[in-house]
Length: 500
Image 1 (cartoon, one colour):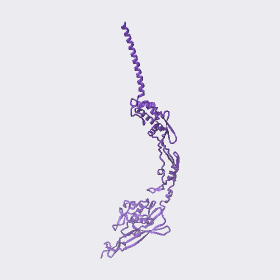
Image 2: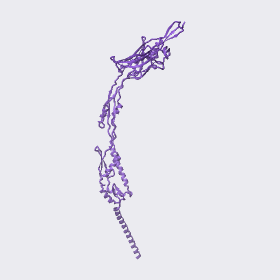
Image 3: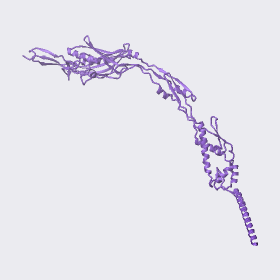
Image 4: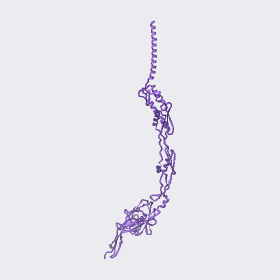
């Protein structure tokens, strides 16, 4: 019976002890929790900006953050102010900068214990960049390019307008600095790219063009005139520089009339006979025929300004196939028969016409012996291949050679457009004469005592020639030396019969 009572008493004591032990442990746990909450400390070296919080308890850190003004952005933000007065708000909540000191203290304590204070900082930076991008997208505008248009009457230039560009990264940094420094306003000046300005000097080369006078082509056909277009580039440039953005300038275009029309040119071309010379047609029928053929080939030759004339090129080779016959000519100083003989009279007559037209002669050769169909010093010998006769059209207009035979004369003239008053004459002077000798040759065809002249010969001479210029009133202006020609003497040849 006693044993049973002791057993029941032991069980009651054990239950009481267990209950007291549980209560003690719960109380100890609550006490330790209270004690831990009041003494948890932030890791050494941790800062909030420049504020050192390492080693402080969470409560101490909260008080320090409040004292440093970290709670001042609650419900506030930063205004971004542009030069035109417009403002764009960035709230502290938008970029994670409200910074409740209690929440910050907990976050700083969690740094290094599984929390991510660095992650929070990176999130704030990203939020600042997003805010900067939002403002840039609202305020950026593209440059409006200028507009150029022109027609036959005017040029219309509309000045472009500037753009506006915000550097988003720089604005994000400016916002971060404002939040950090407690400034509620950021004065922001965006970049202002400007449109291309007018360059009317360059436009002048592009739009304007000179008038073209009526002219002629290589065949002497008249090409019609063309009006030009112009404006004052300096005045247009000055006016464009006074335009406001987006304003339009109208520049009238001027029509530039040509100085010479096709009608006027038609009346000028070949209007005047610049020089003309005639020589008598003498000799055999074949010789005269050769002269006529060469004159026909020469007639109508057109020479543009600056072009050089070639007698051989124009007339061509003198052949029987071309219709030329054998007539007297001088070959190596000897009288002989040659196909085309006599055409030197055509080149010599042309030479004199050139001198009277006052065009420059670029190549001319005198005969070995003086030829009587032109005055001394005024002949020009030619032969196929060489020598040639050449002159240049140095006038401002085309020249046309006219040549023909009529009434026993060969006439060659140069027609063109005379641009000066007056006329030309020719002068020559024999400087020296060499008398021809007489040579007698026996001719068995003659009877004894009979004689005949086979060649009358020529005296030799040296001759100087001049072009003589007179003004419109007939006054002598100048004498221009032309050429000095030297002719050899050719003996008179007498044929006699054999002695009896």
